[in-house]
Length: 99
Image (cartoon, rainbow, N blue to C red; front, side, top):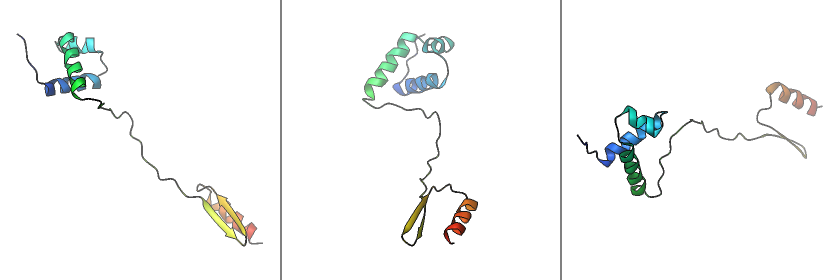
């Protein structure tokens, strides 16, 4: 018996196939779907979406704000250090500059 599916149902099926690690052929075989109908639905959905492309997030990345450099001003001299400069090195540098 032929089953008629809506575009939303096909969208869900296509997303499920893409989330699986199966080829379209294997997915269709395992889910008793016609490969021809699958491709027709995929084509129809791609045409209806225009230039929109659905992206899958594969890796979450935390955005880190760039840190400002450490700037020391002593008289007419300015020393710029990376923000990752250790406290012990900074203390030693300040002691030497204070001489």
